[in-house]
Image 1 (cartoon, one colour):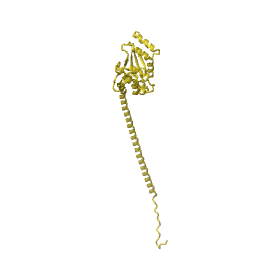
Image 2 (image 1 turned 30 degrees about the vertical axis):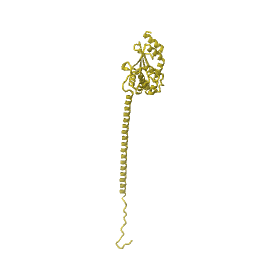
Image 3 (image 1 turned 180 degrees about the vertical axis):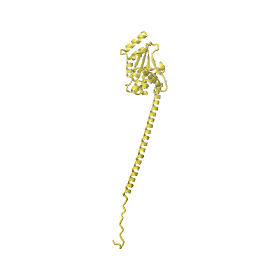
Image 4 (image 1 turned 60 degrees about the vertical axis):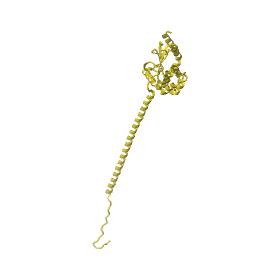
Length: 275
């Protein structure tokens, strides 16, 4: 375009944006975003760790609480199982752990370690019962009954202990021999802890004349002699016997003698008593 003499158009100038500046700005923004993301991750990680630690602490405290409750209950069970030591009337021997049957003047003494849940004990009683009664009634044999709770320990439950306590309650009334026999004659299968039930033990007491009284029922239900039973079983364990029954005639283990029979036992006792 002609603007006249001496005049010219000024050249057009285009201002381009500074690309390097934009790149720097973009990089700066990206760095900030990355830094923010990292900070977010660090915060999340801290929170996660805090939760794990908190859960661990709660778990430990919960476990400690459970252990404490179990320990406390175990202590209570021990107290319920034993209680104050009360031996049965007329008990003899060290710590009063022997229930005697027969005359003290008898020349022979038969010591019988038994468990009322023990099938082998029932077999022994069924085979030797009449012979033992004959010899004790004749004043030739004294029997020292000592009670254990071996089956409770092996099979679980409390029938051995509860039956032994009930037998001790019968001893208080002078009816131990008869009730002892009734328990074996009505022994449940080894895996059946029926003797753990007080009602069952009281029901069987009706088979013994004069035993089913309020005092007997209270003795059975309260576990009056449980502590005595526990101590008797401890004596059995300390004796390191092979099992129940353990039958000693004047200290000699005759139950392990395969040649022993009721007739042979009678012969041995009568020979010592002079016929």
